[in-house]
Amino acid sequence: MNRRPLALLLLLASLLAGLLAALPAQAAKPKEGDVLPDLEAKAQLKPSEAAYLGLPEGAKGFRLSQIKAETILVEVFSMYCPRCQAEAPAVNRVFERLMASPQGQKLKFVAIGAGNSQFEVDFFRKKYQAGMPMIQDADYVLHKAFMAVGTPSYFVLRPLPGGKGLKVLYFHEGQFEDENAFFDEVLRASTQR
Image (cartoon, rainbow, N blue to C red; front, side, top):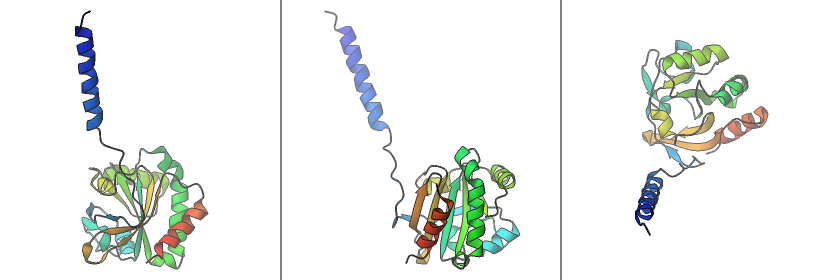
């Protein structure tokens, strides 16, 4: 019996097992109580966006904890995500409802374009008439800090004192099925202590 094919098969099986072991495990998803790092966002905010967030006009970057709000609703989106595109009108309506609600004065909304340049973020904003501030994350720095979630994903975050991070009060990955239920959940989470 020729042992060469058996040895080759065992070698290939060993290599495959090594490759599979080297692959990263499925990333954990954010959950309530997790603390995310408070990294600097690169941004070219319009004066109205800077005013809405309570940030100095003309700033080239900011940390989410610098936003003048008790809580922050963050959407992680991508211009190339068909679900983000389909959900954009509903997201816009949620933003408008938050702006009009009493709790919405204590909660600010910002969208992060995962892997998107400023041009791509501006294109998405214009095409879908998005009213909330939208910032680019071309190098996926914020996306990685937010545990590399899928798009769209939504967080309600509370900045911790002393710049110690952002506490997750709510996390939802994927499209929300019921706009009213999502709005209610965001308001509920934003009032947590």
